[in-house]
Image (cartoon, rainbow, N blue to C red; front, side, top):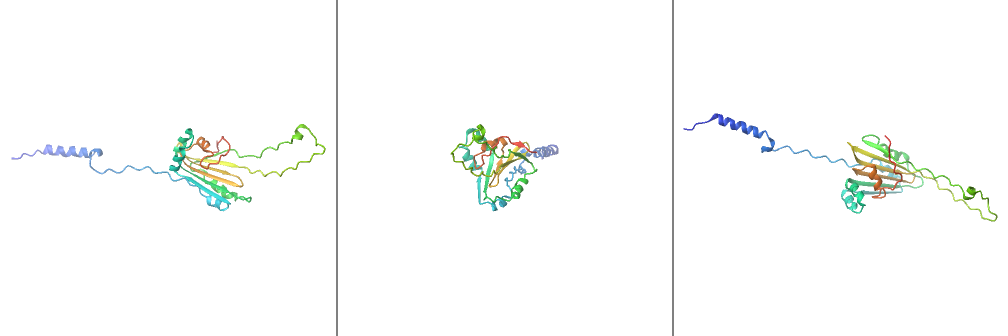
Length: 221
């Protein structure tokens, strides 16, 4: 005769239910872990309008693999900066004497007002002071028989303005746009990745980034 033991059978059911409530011990398919969403590529709108008026327009793009390769030729202290970047895009526009429509450039600048962007700017260049003539500085009058020098026409001063915007991701810099412009030239640099204003100063003159003057990037917000 077979004796059934209901209590033991019921205990096995309870134990099995407990074990199956622990995901790591069950053979059930678990939901996949959420994948990190890659940040959208940093892009600048309105460049077509600037390019349409330019006598010469050039575009350069350095993707992540190109930056890593080029970083091996950079100074040792600059390599960690390159390693944090996803891409660098440089847009250069050269214009005739007529220049370009200022509204087209202002439209590019305006898109970085707010929305996580902070505006930094170097000081705009100013015309050099007029130097006094040597004769006037020492009180020497005209020399008899000397041929008067013909003053060459002064070249019109073309002030250059440099704007820098940085995008914040929580407490980190995650993207930067640099616009360097005067009447005959406009350079737009789009740096996608983690970069600080100090990093930008190290990259001037590399990857097509203009060697703009000024080390005093100031927060304009």
